[in-house]
Amino acid sequence: MILAVRANMPTFREVEFRPGFNVVLADRTKESTRRDSRNGLGKTTLIEIIHFCLGGQTRRNQGLMVTPLKGWTFSLEMRVNGRELSVTRSTETPSWVNVYGDVRDLTASSKRLDGTLAIRTSEWNSLLGELAFGLERAPISKYHPTFRSLFSYVVRRGRDAFASPFLHYRTQQEWDKQVNNAFLLGLEWEHAGQLQELKDQENLLNSLRRAAREGLMEGMIGTLGNLEAERARVDSDVRSRSEGLDSFRVHPQYEEIEQEANDLTSTIQQLSNANLADGRLVDLYRSSLQDDQAPDADDVLAVYDAVGVTMPELVRRRLDEVEDFHRQIIANRRAYLESEIQRIEANRNQRELQIQSGVERRAQLLEVLKTHGALLEYTRLQELHLDLISTRNDLDNRISNLRRFEQGRSEVRVNKELLLQTARREFEERREVRERAINIFNLKSEELYNAPGNLVVDVTDAGFRFDVEIMRSGSQGINNMKIFCYDQMLAQLWANEEPSPGLLVHDSTVFDGVDERQVALALELAQREADRWGFQYVCALNSDTLPYDDFSSGFDLNQFVRIRFTDETEEGGLLGIRY
Image 1 (spheres, rainbow, N blue to C red):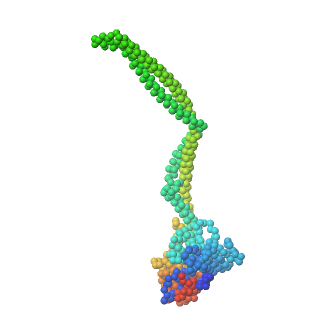
Image 2 (cartoon, rainbow, N blue to C red):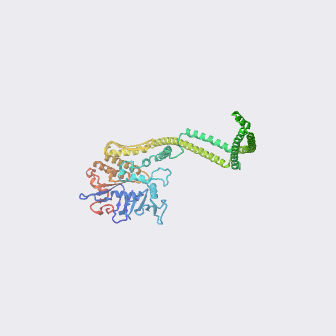
Image 3 (spheres, rainbow, N blue to C red):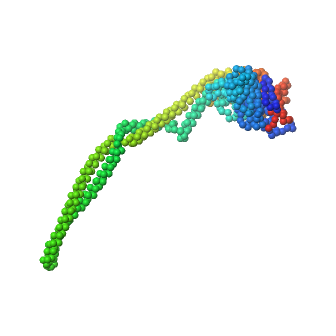
């Protein structure tokens, strides 16, 4: 329950509230126009101040965090859970609040000597959640109701808050809607939080699967059968490579032996080439020996005799001398060729011995090379072996990841089904709580429209489903009255709870588009219910839209007006200034 709203500036018009029905009224004169100002008369600003003092989030250049309000400090006095507290928060230091009043046994991180609290807004929100709704200071579950979200149903802020009974802003997440509405209705909100955690797991698994398919990550691509087949092949290669390494013998002079074998191969090749060339030369020399014949003088004389020419004796003697000379030359040439042949053959025989020796030595070296290996080669084989082991380990990880992925999907499906079964069972166990809320809503909607309404609460595969129906639905006005009835129902439910916010605040937006007759009925209903059930109802209204002619004869709205704003003067608004 709000007792008063104040500020540190003298222009501010303090607002004091009472238990039950309270009206904040804004008068617009006929002569006035909507001046070019951002803050208007102050109805919306009052709601902003309430949220500001009760830990609402701030944004630069929005709401109260504008330059004209720099240096302003707002205070809110309230009664909550049997305590009277006063909280102040400055636009200069919005991260902190000062709390005064009955704080003697409140647990807080910082207490002054006089017992007052100076705490961060985050801690203030946790404290308010405990005082107003009985929330835990440190909730275990990831998805849980928070004071700020719950209070945004108690004091709806902005037009988006009037789009649906179950939302306090249009982009509110589904889990937040389910958790907080289930909590407000007295249902097992934990199921909605647990369901969202399962959805998170499912979304994570699906995102990992998509990433694997798109090549953004490894570990789950392919089927389990394909990965296991590849793993078997790689494992076979690992065993084969391991056996090769086990039988590998490293020779310390492997490189020297290998070089000697290569040198021997080169020498043997050179010797073989030399023998081949000398063999061809010997064949040539032997052919020359066969062809070398000295000319016969008798053959020459026979030619002359055949033609009838008689050679003188002197000529005959000279021919004999020439023949002897040629014979000597041929004899000398033959002797030389035979000597060369002997020398070359001797060289060839020597080379053959060298070749034989080289071949035998090379065979010995090759045998060593065959049965041993170099350290460098062994190192290379080890590296290849380690690469194969790494590939096998990677495949093991991928197979394990894929198995966990498939198992995770199965577990999520099973856990989700088990959770839904539990939720449906406990949902039925809370039938009395649910039906009380439904009946309250239906009665309130019927009072406004003389037509049945229906609050729908159900458990589906997606979690809690909420909806409201009024038989005459269709216009924006009736949609707003769904919100009015829903909020009134919550206020009545929580009026009997301890702790309880004991409060409901509506801006005039809730009556936009509503027929005057229904506005009158709604205001009278709010006044009766607030007095009957003991909660505080605050509504901000425009005087030019009030259906005075439709109020009951015994209902006097003016007696509930706690403050009246006017645009006749600059000081007539809540802040006492225009900007």
